Image 1 (tube, rainbow, N blue to C red):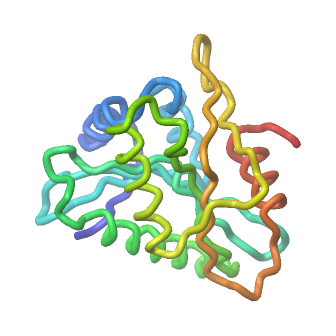
Image 2: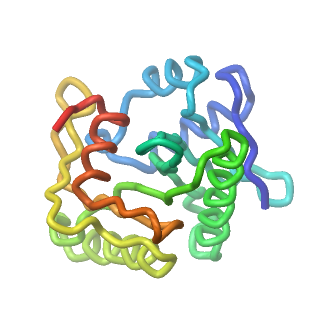
Length: 201
């Protein structure tokens, strides 16, 4: 399995990633595809990677690296999905490891320390029904099993991502790679809100 960067919107993998993105996340939880296109064309630390297994497309991830404090890079998993026909085969854990390695390499290239991973996870207690609750709990358990933990004392609310879209209460989960970095949960929350959503707390 490998991750391959989708460098531009003309890449044949881009429409595959966008199609899976739009089918995997409800409208309130995703930005419009035009915004994704604009971010990709900016040439910033935002990137989309396709996930390839035996040369075939099986999923995608949208990632962004931000610098927290001086000399420390934080890797953000903005969106990540596997083709629904291929879920349940253990791909998720392998992809998570590859994403972590990708951020580690990016940190080294910029002579920065890799602080860890930060990402949103739906709150099980806010599910619409029991089936949805179990699915959300499995996702949260998956990330916690790999080393993540929900930020404590934080009521994280993903802001409205467009006209007619609602705010979404979610967990913000942190997987520390350098325990020696003393960064508290409120600081992580503030950095995420400012650098991802442009909201200053």
